[in-house]
Length: 633
Image 1 (tube, rainbow, N blue to C red):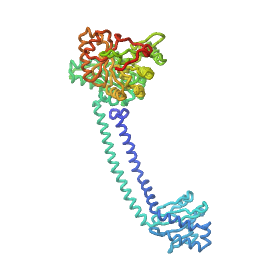
Image 2: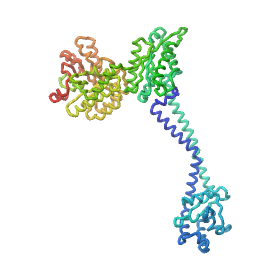
Image 3: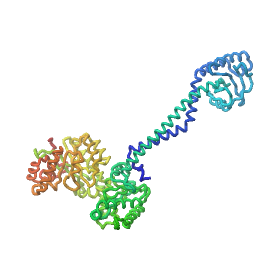
Image 4: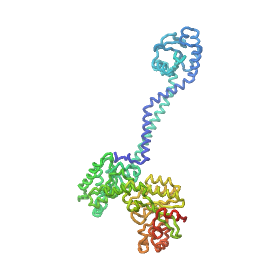
């Protein structure tokens, strides 16, 4: 059951542990039930070993008997001297545990004696021979291979070695060597010892392996139990972090749910009663979703649902969301003796297969949830694009794929020496003489899978310039989602030989998976790339970026810089940020530098670099590549 083990999203290490355990346990079980077969193989192996010396001597004897004798059967019948000589040769094989040696011939599927070495009960030539298993001889006749046959019906006889005698490619007779029961008993005693050891090894090994398996199942259960919220199907947010890279989010519809006006409940009834309300809501939702669905307490009163597309089609998903909304609306929650009625707002994403990352899916659901709350709460809002926006998006995609994407370049200048440090690549689209700027491109594409294609195009565009111009240095803008994109990371790795001339500026967004972004940053830094946080001080920026990410540069947003000479608060904020950056070996770049007064103030703070119209506006590459080469610091 899903509420016990999450095998579809289990951590990869535990998945392989389980797989190895199942395979090994299956081998143990197979080996245990195949012990009789193994014992039989062992018996024949030891029998083969025990007859090895006699077998070689038997081959020599057969060669001597058939030498200068084209027809063994005829000579045995009509030449008594030859027969007597051959019987004397056979007697050499009666040694050790060999009790009798004789030769029989096969005629019309009946056997008769040719030669016999027994003195007391000597069989006459032509006398019928009645074997215990005739099928054994017929098998040897067919394949011309020797056979060891364990006797079960003759007292004092253990086993018999049967060797075919071949003349001119035709089987003429069989040489039989009977071994005593004593020899077989000795052999079976050895086999019994080995079998007992093997059986005990299987039993002891099986028990130990079962205990080991139970231990790991317990470990897995305990690991995932710590994520579970008791008496519900819900998991805490740490579970999402654990399955983040493994879950195939495109297999699910995703919904973000929020209890309306929950702050009022906490304010009126207290946090303890508020937690009880959340718990009862989770129990109610747990009763409505399936075992294949994933239910996560995303925040205090915010819940994340992954509804399996395999088990639920789109229409039934919509019914389910409405059932949850109505179910909570009609749910009577008791706080003490007081009855409380609450509602849910929901944002849902159905076309998850068109989304580039789980982070992006959750962001879309969050935007849809915001719309649901903005439009009155207690409703479900699906993330969808309007037809006009969709048409414009398709036009943008076509323009980007048809190589209308270009970069303009704005220089970044050292404030202390006035020298060019590098350029920043700024995205543009050229459409029939018209320039389309990023603010008209990115907002319409950033919630689509195609957004990552822009990052790929920008990298490819600038790599071409860097390889043509060894003196050119540039920084490119990538989002934190781009750094989690395997294709973009692979492209950066392939071009690591020019990493000393290509900086990476990270654009901030609402949701930042610090752990995974930091892993990508560390990979890039090992390859020689320098990392910069762009537009710090606006939008989604916060100190978490500085505390959690290993960066080399911090670019202060223009909204702080442009008013620095007239806004005291901006003045103090920049002063603090520069001090913090220098204490952590981070160099500072200021945007929107528009006059000399701002330059002097920034120099006074110790800001290393500036960028803005005071130095130069952004220009196409062709405007400076031949006349204004970048200089070393």
